[in-house]
Image (cartoon, rainbow, N blue to C red; front, side, top):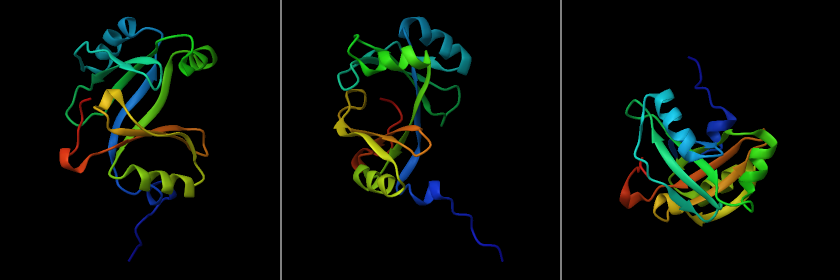
Length: 159
C-alpha cells in the first residue's frame, strides 16, 4: 500500500480554500482590461476600486469558466506607490497569487514556520469589503497574498 504524498507546500498551508485571484501590475487599467478580458474569454464589469494600502486602483476580470480564479489588474495611483518601483524594475506583468484562507493568523504562523517573510501584516482591504489580507514572500521569492474568508459569509469569489 502506498502512502499519500504530502508536500511541504500543502503541509504548511492550513485552511487554504482556493486560488482566489492572480494579480498583474499594469501601467493603465483602461488600456489593459479589455485585452485581458479577451485573452481569457472572461468578463469585466468596469468597476475600479481605490486601494489606499497599495496606493493603487484595482479591478477584477472574471475568467471564462465557473471556478476560474479572478484576475486582478493593479495600477499605481501615484509616484509614491511601491508598484511604480515594480513597474520600473520588471515592467507590467505577473505580481502575485492570492489564496483565500479560513484563518489568516494561522496561515501567517504556518508561513513563518516555513521560512517565509511577512511583507505586510494583516489589514482590511478596500477591494474585499474590509476582509483582512496579508502579504508574504516565500523562500523562492514568490509574493503571496492571503485573503481571510469570513465563515459567516462563505466563500466569496467577487470583490
